[in-house]
Length: 299
Image (cartoon, rainbow, N blue to C red):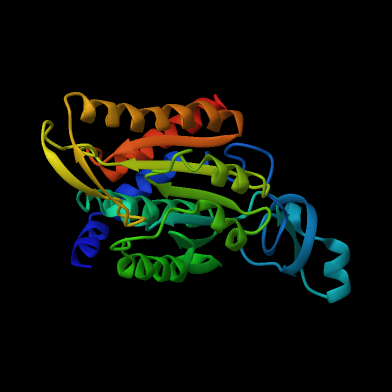
């Protein structure tokens, strides 16, 4: 818990604000596709369809004054419009046991990225919720807006932790919590045979935008070769006695890299924004890299 609190304390609000200015036009509601965005009745925006009216206040644009409505109510009223770019988002954070291995650096970076994404989306006045998952949904905080929501989600992140064992990463379970037309940010190591492609595709079918930050450890396969080991799968508990032969670690690294290459090939075809990063990166380097990719899509 202390480690997580210290990691979150590294998020400097001035730095978040600078990154936010870069992120604003890229997370305005149309970052990757035209799906998942709808007129939000809870707040007004700059659309063309009238939401309702309110009394004129100093500083309001005179062009929004509705003179017929003002005459009927005997005082100036301005038109409010539907916010056509507002949408609900969920941050889906993987807390399966592999997120704590081989050290806790993966989890700490993942938590920092989750908090940063929440900040950036709330800054754009989207509603943001949080789902933590492993073999099923572990916790859900429904979407909300404002600084209070930011504080609530930070509190939830502070008390979250990877499972000590068990808990395979079932990203597809998040679809039930997210619901139709919501957009999502998935933060996970994506350590599954298919790189969780099936789960990502299921989220994409909900109609919202899907962003993926894959967090890998810089020392994911750091084992000395030519030794006897008893390996245990942190998520399934299955044990296997092995005698590592020369090249075994290199082949394991190649397998992990193959998962990333598969995701890099499949995600663009599905309209999914995908960025791999490692614990050698800082939280702001990872976020800026993802935003650069979004910028290239828009350019």
